[in-house]
Length: 324
Image 1 (cartoon, rainbow, N blue to C red):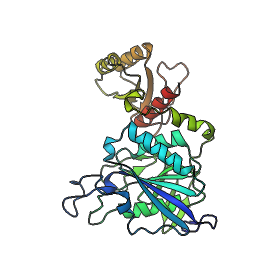
Image 2: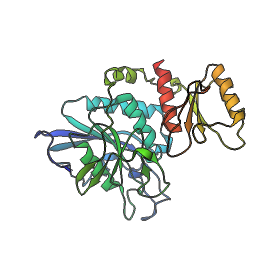
Image 3: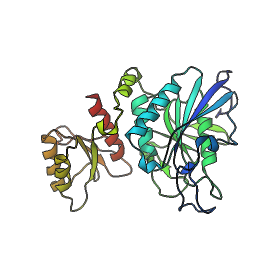
Image 4: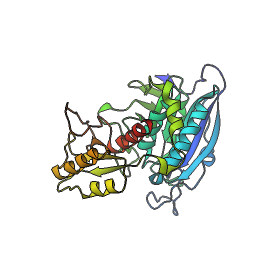
């Protein structure tokens, strides 16, 4: 095991904590109410009150957004990615922690890894209970996230919740209210944080393509309406194609189908998706299953999204369209 509170290289360096709101910053009208609360009510500086910085590191805080993560959008993503890139580009910054809501954490994590692919640690953390709950989980999650970001061996975008470290590519919210709400599917977690120690299970999510990523970040439109419009449709028993046809008429640029099983699509919906593809709309098939992936075959009429979930396939398709 590797101690998490050791100074990085013996130098005094910085950890940056960026706040975006979420349940971790939420307040309930009555103590102990874990459901009837309002997210994003207190600032990230207040969340850090009483949190000790890992040894040899100084904590800096910045409020990037203050939203319920169900309302996450392209404008916040772009601003967050830019602030992460700016801070991670500083030689004196060891890593960045982002406090985030749980509902769209997996999407933000995937977006940041796809756009930035940082060699330094970029750690997202969250909470399932509001800050004034009788036993809030946010403080421990934040402490664990700071500890992971302080480790010189960690790299890439990861999510830390309930003592478990997940990779951006695999992390998913699997439960609506349990404290241990996230999983990593077949791949399993990257590591655990146990009594101040990091127990690593597999490699960190580094990228070999970092050299071209600043150009991708620069291509992100400032105005959200300028981003490619990509929508998700679901294949299910009795599915039809009317929604797809309507989206095509409305000018959609891309469609992801949350398909059954190994990417199978109801025949009526499939015909509509083929019409959309013939009209110039980019289409991808992802599985609506929590585990596994879509195994495509040569000659498939509709391209597959591999191991990506529907929401992550939507982000990747947006980025592909932006990159041309």
